[in-house]
Amino acid sequence: MKRYVIIGNGCAAVGCIEGIRKTDPDGPITVISKENHHVYSRPLISYYLEGKTDPEKMKYRGADFYEKNGCEVFFGQSAVKIDAAAKTVATDGGRVIPYDALCVASGSSPFLPKFEGLETVRDKFGFMTLDDALALERAVNGRSKVLIVGAGLIGLKCAEGLHGRVGSITVCDLAGRVLSSILDDECAAAVQRRLEAAGITFMLSDSAVRFDDHIAYMKSGAEVPFDVLVLAVGVRPNTGVFKDAGGEVGRGITVNERMQTSLPGIYAAGDCAEGDDASFGAKRVLAIMPNAYMQGSTAGINMAGGDSEFCSAIPMNSVGFFGFHIMTAGTYEGQMSEERDGDSLKRFYVKDGLLKGFIIIGATERAGIYTSLIRDRVPVDSIDFESAKKFASYSIFSPEIRRKKLGGVV
Amino acid sequence: MKRVYVNEEWCLGCHLCEYNCAFANSGLKYMTGLKGRKLFPRIRVDGDDKITFAVSCRHCTDPICVKSCIAGAISKCDGVVRIDKNKCVGCLTCVLVCPYGALAPGEDGVMQKCELCLDNVCGAPACVAGCPNNAIVFEERSETE
Image (cartoon, rainbow over all chains, first blue to last red; front, side, top):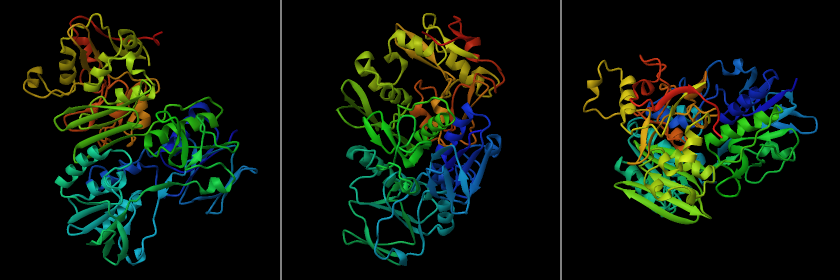
């Protein structure tokens, strides 16, 4: 019987387990989980702070998931060494686990720049894990002044989660706009206005350079007093153990469309991996949950001897703040065209006759139809793209395409 | 596995399926209760003055919404894609990925989609039962060529 080992216990690991079980119902699966928790959804930690969910509901799969899938989980242990020749993984708990197929789904870790005086700050937190959220929750009260370093998805969702349960929230970022990795200037400004209307203060193109106890000294010369500090500067793929084993690593662990790495018998999936971006035509780390699951599932099927390729990965995000939704997908290159309706804005990017990316603020209805145009590389001249930009619907397709897509099993 | 299909050539564009769907899932005793309320149907009529058709969840063989849900709230069981409303946080990731536009927030902001009326009093798709021109059918089909 084939023995499977998975380093990591997140969404990519679940995809991998479910992928393996599609093909091989019996081979034993060992999961190495750094966190002492049943698999849960990390992006839900901000919803937890908001009171919209709880640790029980945050479980990504049911309580019987591991048992049902024949998995043994080593909680609270990290993989410290992969021996690719002997085909074993060693953990910091002293175990050496043999494998026939290994999936590295080790995720990412917060990136911490060197801030002078950071050691003098007592109440400082990351915002990645459930334990981070629980610790942050314990540290704040209705009067707390919170400073969040980083106006990306993690920083802003943290701000939304804390909103209403702290005294004040200030978010700073070296970038000149919020969500700088997924929004352009104008869209970012619209999102920033919404957050400011909710009472959140921004200091952009500015960041802390030095901390002293409860004061942040900013690049601009400003001094920001705070009670609680959240560091949400960015994340880095956890590639160390794989790299040490001699595997090929770019920004993340290099994988092909079958999620194979450069080392035989070793696969990678999720935030630690760098696979093909179908909208961009090159390899990218796509640190988002849907891709983590799909990469994991692809890896699992192939590990168990099945045949699966994942060729339609693209960056995509759906994020809401105070009931206001933003969706982005793909790559913003080529000809931009936009549709406006009141506060809503849609921007589409077309290159080489294909929709490459979009940004939608507000009017998110049926946006998956747009996403599928990117994923499936549908030529825009084969659809009624002018109507599509206004209104996502199956009217944009020819009757033949509708019959094919809606008239049978898909 | 039986699914809901809409025969475009028979669809009158009357929107009755939307009313029947909204009513079936409303818990209301009489349809008159829908009057004056904003409807949140799980099937949607689209088209123009020439062509009309309706779209609801395809209950895909390999559903991308299930793989993409960040809360693990969507699952497929016995051929039916379902949402655990208790786990959904309304992030709309499923809206971003569904190629059919078949998921949307309900009145409470939690996502909803066609679950074939299995959990409401109808027990079978109300859109099918109420279609005046038999344009909507609930039947077994294979892949289209």
